[in-house]
Image (cartoon, rainbow, N blue to C red; front, top):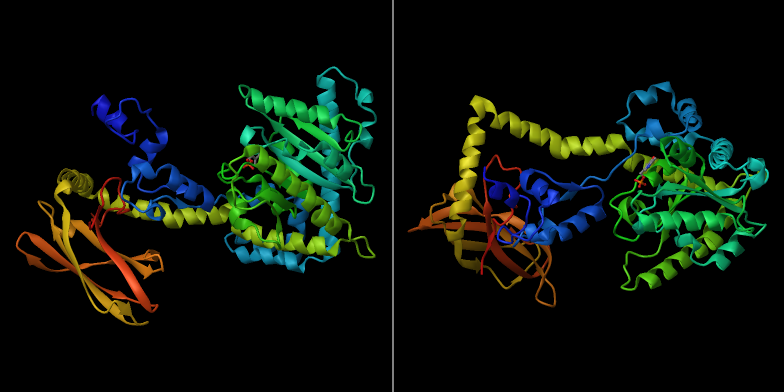
Length: 510
Ligand SMILES: *Cc1c(COP(=O)(O)O)cnc(C)c1O
């Protein structure tokens, strides 16, 4: 293979010698399947890489989604795990792919689930105090200079967790945007609040390091001292205490830059509730029964304005919704409505966002079909693979000559519900055989702007020849009365092809 041919695999435009080689383009061109790690991420990816698929409608660009999940056994606290065993029976853990086990949470009495939460918060706080001591010591400071470490953080107080790499798009200092407002929240004696922040920045990311510096300064202000704590060198150990102990997990990236995010899932399976921007996984996971949303599915042109609006929402939701719910207790000091949300979050988010579900999706959508395809292609010393490669070359070489010359329809302009109409297309194929193409009718109900409102595709079958042309036909079922719009397209077709929407290989009737 020539160096030029190889480099061309990593660029959108082979003729543009200035274009940088892109690993993503290389991967998309050489892979049978591609996916994003959340629904929103795959939407964003289809938009980002549409240049690679000219002529293919954006929603058909072959980048699907498999949303990430977290490994429950790793991230769930042993105390909650023991409650699962007690109320679900020991046999339940033998079938981890049976997601109905998450319903076991319903059987756990509210006060026991709450006691687990209070216990995990206490354990987390003891751990964080220990970390804080080490942190001070490593800087040559005596713990005493910080005041009494054992008075830092309160095991009974509502606790927000925030931890991540301090990449700037994650907006690590958004909650500190209006310090006066935040002070008011932190100084309200009726609704006590504290916050644990952990993280690190990439050594080369000066902006990220500056954010951390500012947070540490703020945490030393008298109003926040002992209530806002920054823990350095975020790692798996710190993460595990944090996601098991916090009441609310805060996540406020700039939408739609977070591909998925997994920390909020780790918190959720421990009964922590998410307060997050509708980005990554939260865009598809959020509903008001399991947590809170920061803002809408909307990006402002003005970044400053967006930060103002969204920080304001964080303060408002904390004051009006989160804190009152947390501090409304029954006679046994259990916040029943809060516990109800915890249970719903554990059931819904545990079921949807665990790694068993994720792996099963990958296996069913990609690994099994890929393995099946490989086992067919490798037989007889890769005879079918060679044949497919030759076929592909021929399609690419002769694709130029493929042309849809005529499309006609039979049926009324207005179609009654349950009726159908026929479409016939005449296609000039040049040197390509009819069995090597996939002909589809692309159709939909016409809206009042004469546009297809929702499109569907139906395969057209070859019904005859007309000299050097082939005739294809389909009957279009109409499940809705009205006027229909349609067109016809040709794609490459081969039984061994994983996807038909290949870069550059699509022809539409014009
Ligand atoms: C889960 C985890 C991450 C990833 O967090 P996201 O929410 O996916 O950004 C990073 N670091 C540690 C230590 C973690 O446990």
